[in-house]
Structure formats: C-alpha cells, structure tokens
Image 1 (cartoon, rainbow, N blue to C red):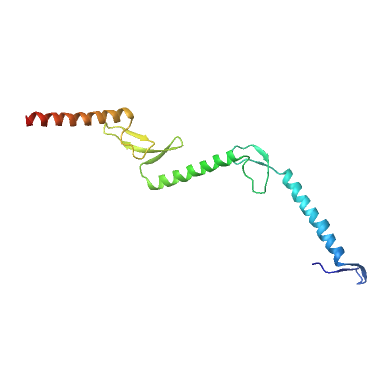
Image 2 (cartoon, rainbow, N blue to C red):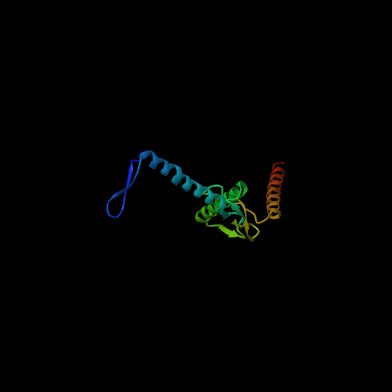
Length: 152
C-alpha cells in the first residue's frame, strides 16, 4: 500500500497532492513496467561466449554458461577427469600423467619399465604377458610330467 504523497516547493508551500491510487498506479504501472522492460531488453541483447567450445550465443538466463547440453556435458566430463587425476596422483605413488592421461608404472619381469592405463597391470605389453603365462604353464606341465614319471 502506498500512502498519499504531498509535494512542497522550496518555500514550504504545498504545490501538489497525489492520492494513494494515483501514486500506486504511477509506481506499479510505469516504474515496474520500465524496470521489467529494461531487464527483458538486456536479456535479449546479452551475447556470451560458451565456456566449453568458445562459440558466441544469446544468453537464455542470467546464469547461462554453455551454448548447448552437449557442451555442458563435455565440460562436466572434463571436470570429472580433472578430479580423478588429482585424486589418483595424490593417493598413488606409481601414477604419472603422460600425454594428458593418467598412467601407472609397471616393472615387468622381463626387466622393462612401462606405463600402462590400469593400476593392476603386471606386464609391460600383451606380448610379454603371453610369454609369461605360456612359460608359467609350461613349467607347470613340466612339473606334472616329472612327477608322473617319478611315480611310475
């Protein structure tokens, strides 16, 4: 509710009296309309740059940062990758970043040192893994054959 307004001149004489209805219509009709209109014009004219791809786009809301859902998703994935890297590097002493990816140090039985994607990797390559498994199973087979010959 707006009360009636009295306007005085510099000598203190009453020059104008505005009723509460007129004051209310002035405030709510013109002032608020002007504020909303200016806000609406500013929104339409606001062109911002996408935080993910760098493309310029008209802002749909005052907090828009991305031009599309795809850009928002890719930015979120990048954020999650950064979080993962920081966590792994802080907790694992064998972790290292190579070409932007997290790699883990592997000391293979063949004597080589390699960096692999998995922290559970044991061998430097697939070929080395096959050699290790084939030699392990070959030794088991030889041991079985030797025990079989000894028991006969």
